[in-house]
Amino acid sequence: MVKIAIADDNEKMLNIMGKVLAEQNDFEVVGMATNGLEIINIIKDKQPDIVLLDIIMPQIDGLTVMEKVKTDKDVTKEPTFIVISAVGRESVTEDAFNMGATYYIMKPFDNQMLINRIRYVKSNKKLLDNKRAALVTDNSEAVSDRSLEADITEIIHDIGIPAHIKGYQYIREGIMLSFYDKNMLHYITKCLYPTIAKKYKTTSSSVERTIRHAIEVAFRRGNRQVLEEIFSNTICSKKTKPTNSEFIALLTDKLRLEYRTRNAS
Image 1 (cartoon, rainbow, N blue to C red):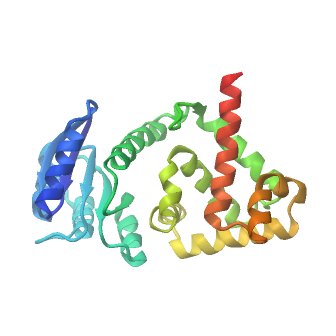
Image 2: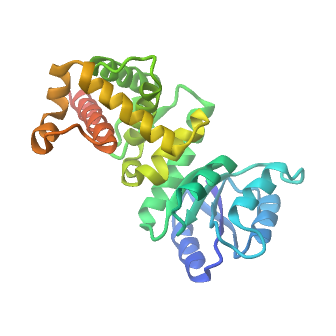
């Protein structure tokens, strides 16, 4: 059972989220707040696993809540924060990730996407605690973490991206995240780049530029045969290199297809 607390100064939004999440058999909504002070007290008293946190709230904003939770000695269990906000400025999203947010979801959003994101965070926590746990995709394909990493490494190597450039690591991480959560690529600048940036202690814009550079290197010096096999439709239709999101999406889809084929045989 995942214990969830919610903070949003919009009471209508707060009640909708509370109702939707409470209907899930594996979720327990342990508290709801309309301002930053209330959610801090709920975190202390109820010790939720996950906190859905709005950025703009009265008394204390969401960024300050995360900062205070990190430093408050009365907080015995630090929750995972998923920020939910209508503010989409890159500087704000970067600040949120720097303060410890795991995800940044833009309003308005689909309720099922929120549920999936919470379940992803729950599963990812288990993966961090147990490296031999399995990743499960939306199609219920069981994939060992180690096996997926090896397959991603192999496909990037086959394309011809050198392992020593930073973009190699960022693309590998992007494929890992997108393989598990398809919504990542729908919010590439708001979620995928900041998530990678947080892990590697850099900025979203740097991640974007570095991935772009790696793609340029691949198409200049990589294995042309493999590139044409994977990206032929994109290259032919646009007569240009794929965008960052297209590049990661096509590699992710290729891996998904391979795993489906393996599981079916």
